[in-house]
Length: 114
Ligand SMILES: [Zn+2]
Image (cartoon, rainbow, N blue to C red; front, top):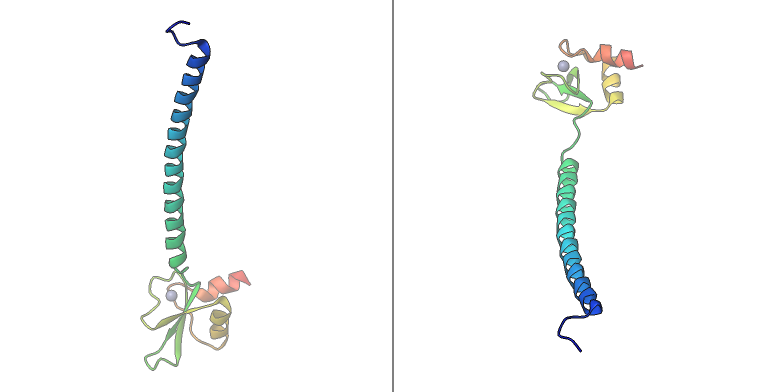
């Protein structure tokens, strides 16, 4: 019987050390993964909260019932009394002689799309 650890004891000791290191690495990785998942979820939520810009605007007159102009969604001057409109609503308005904005020319864009 010697005081020196046997080869088998050394191997078992080494196995415990490696196991502890592996567990610590896994805990660290799990923290990184959880962190990344939380950030990803936050990014998704903030994207969902932001409504997409409308494709078209219809501008109303001062009386709020008459329609005074049709604009594209990215017009720089769609007026203060604008309401978001679908492509169909914008086309309908143009067919009903609502003037097309002279700045963004929605009539040209819509005709081009047809
Ligand atoms: Zn416009």
